[in-house]
Length: 58
Image 1 (cartoon, rainbow, N blue to C red):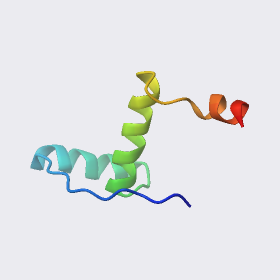
Image 2 (spheres, one colour):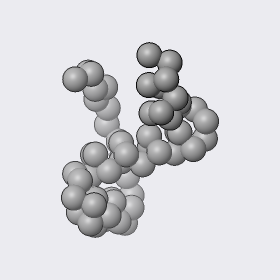
Image 3 (spheres, rainbow, N blue to C red):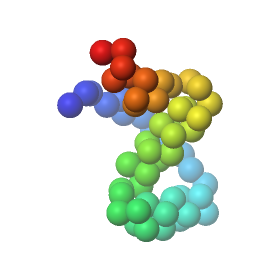
């Protein structure tokens, strides 16, 4: 398992409540939900190679 970088993230209370409900709906922790959303956004923005492209290079 790769190492994870730890950092403090301050969020608006309303946004946190939304993320908490959303993560519960998808059976994830809030941390995992935020990481999922950030990964998805980075891929859609072309900042991160998609999983399929990664596996083709290896």
